[in-house]
Image 1 (tube, rainbow, N blue to C red):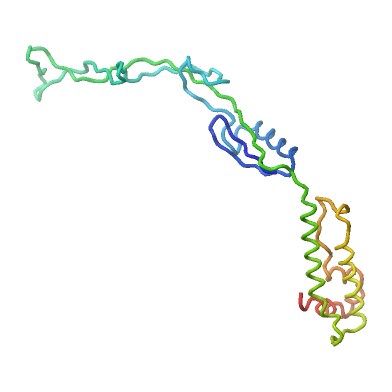
Image 2 (cartoon, one colour; image 1 turned 180 degrees about the vertical axis):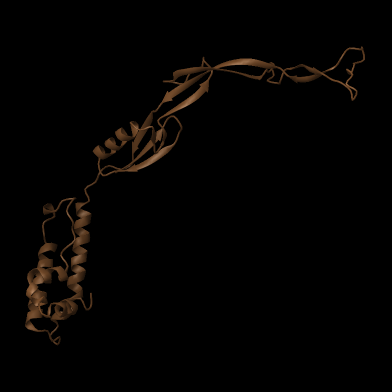
Length: 227
């Protein structure tokens, strides 16, 4: 199954692929206990106006700083700064004989709160668990049919094969047919649908053919000649 986990705190989304709902829940529970997780921080610190706490926010500390003061039109308010002097260090006077001053932005003290926003996320399941047994079964049957079709040439009348070879081929092909015709209910999702190779079949059922330079490898090579 596939799920998308969205972090409400920072808006990040993480895709998770698990085989079951139980595995997905275990994954989420494990990540919640960590300081970090794939889809972002488990919590986030914000500096906010005391009157505008985000939902679930927890107070951490008071933050005091200065920022430019604005008028009703959101324009910076200016105030007198240092006196303006000439190259001789004498004050520069205006038309009325008064000292002139630099105009600088007026600053005001702002009190804010640093808060912690706990983790919150949503999970959207994109796919539900599905039984893949029919798919595995069909793929296995195709592989068996391919091997049977590819080795039919061994039984054409003008192909000369020693009786011992032919008997091994007949027995193995029957094993494939039996596997092909198995009822699908006898398989499970966890079971491997790969059938036994001819090489393994020979070594399991005719181990004596490989002793003292026997014919085992030749039997296998002949069978696999056109696979």
